[in-house]
View 1 (tube, rainbow, N blue to C red):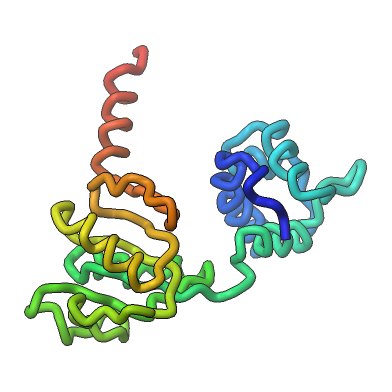
View 2: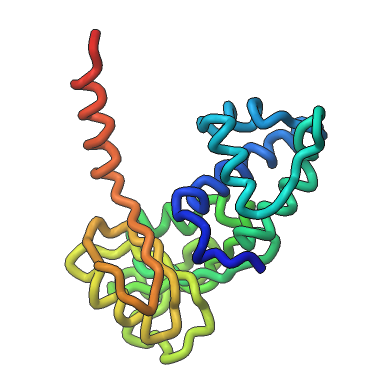
Length: 208
């Protein structure tokens, strides 16, 4: 297993994009790809792509390019997409339900096995064949290490604490609230309003 602590975080963040592009190439029955073509598909420079791969070894064939199937399998192994990961989702409202029904999770090996909420109106409902449970009944050891937060921002920190206590080690935070960076877990924040604000800035700052 690679010593990931020595690999720059931006490199790790780009690997899923390379994986997606390689999967598309595989579906197109393309067996060899150049660094320029793959970099173009992933919207990075070819030199950046080659540097990112260099952290994990040698993959290319001189004068030919990269074997798509081999590189696809290798990156899948590096970012652990060669196995299934169980996920707990907290928040069964509109956003949580949409996330639970997102087909991309299954394609990438992520399986939502638990859904929790605090609302009596939602508890007992079924979301993508998973029964919504009462968050107050979250067990001390859930047996799941990945979690998704889709609760109101005001409940984000308390809910995150509950998940950490149940054994969750990594959280995808859709609440818009800042959880900080507790030392015992990894947090990735997805703030849609934040992303739209950045797009709005670029629209108004473009030179016409």
